[in-house]
Image 1 (cartoon, helix red, strand yellow):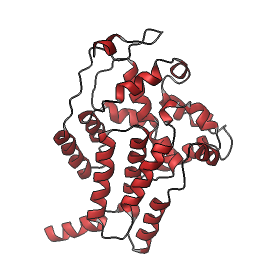
Image 2 (cartoon, one colour):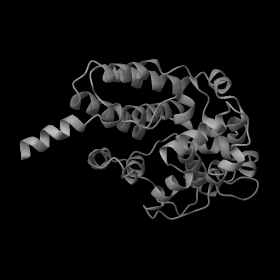
Image 3 (cartoon, one colour):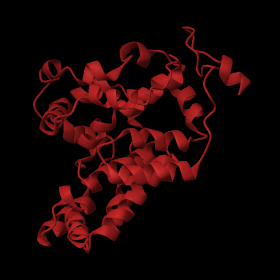
Image 4 (tube, one colour):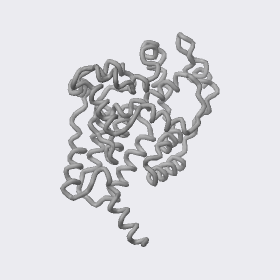
Amino acid sequence: AIQSAVECARDGTLLRDPRRVEPRYSLPKAYGHFRDLLKDKEETSHVFKIFEALPSRDYVPRVRALTLSEQLRAEEPFLPPILDDHEALRRLPEGSVAQAYCDFMEREGLSAAGLVAEADKLGRPRYGDLVEWFGFRSRDTHDLMHVLTGYGRDGLGEQCVLLFTHGQSPSHGHLLIGYAGALNIKKSVKSRAPVFRACRQAQRTGVACPPLVEMSILELLAKNLEQARAELNIPEPHWYRECHRIWHEEGIDPYDLLAKDQQQELAKAA
């Protein structure tokens, strides 16, 4: 701990500021936040709190491996301004990752700055160390993962992206939200859709794909989307698509999975 407190890059940026509070692992606390997230899925601050409650031992070693080299930090000090400059991204070729990313963000009404604002609601102190830079980068590539993997923003799609992220950067937080969320879908929606197969495929894809957080995002955005998927070992999300196909057959809206269940509960209450 003493070594990591004083360790720094050549430019003097600390690896881990010694003022940082050592995170404490608490599964009950994480589960409490998960229950709150199920009640209000739009309140994404619960996601950040779950990760805080389930810190990974491998996190600082992963940060060290990437961030003591300064080239990536110099080229991409902070991703949101790059990702939100759609005017510049739209100048990249048709069929590029950038074009698909802009389409996705504009269709969903999202921005990288919006995710930053959600995280800022927690009011956590800023340290300006390499742990912080790595954490921001991991957060800010989330929507890019949706685009590269083909998983949508429906309930199952979000679980799949979290489990893809676990494959990339293992943490109990991703496992808890991903599989507990999938279990909640399976319990709440009576269907033969292969939800867990979709989740396992997402996790395996994350393992096979080189860590996105370690790549030049500018270079990735300029690549052809299909070429990028081939290079990164990202296959068609077959089981996720199969879930959507079956749900449509069964008259279930994948983007409103719990609607029928909630309506029945409301009817009982009335």
